[in-house]
Length: 98
Image 1 (cartoon, helix red, strand yellow):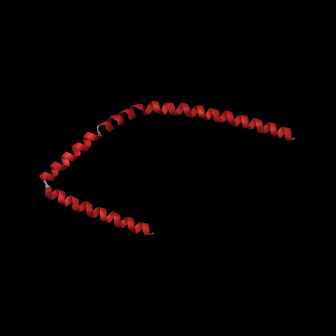
Image 2 (cartoon, rainbow, N blue to C red):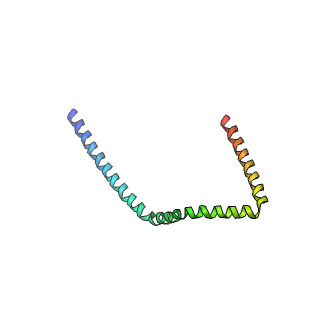
């Protein structure tokens, strides 16, 4: 009985090892397929990221232009943002207590 049990256990182990090997092969094939499908999106995203410094410079210039042209609006906007941040901070502090 003991030999039979060891033999069954060894067969089960071999079966599980084959199943694991099959799953690894499937995973490898699926991951390669996923990379092939998303390759065009990755290239597009990398192209967009290449323009990030130019967008930052353009946003700074637009902000400076808006500030020089309408300083009162900038002052009003900055006061609103400070008050919004204050409300958020108050809410966070209140939630942290509980």
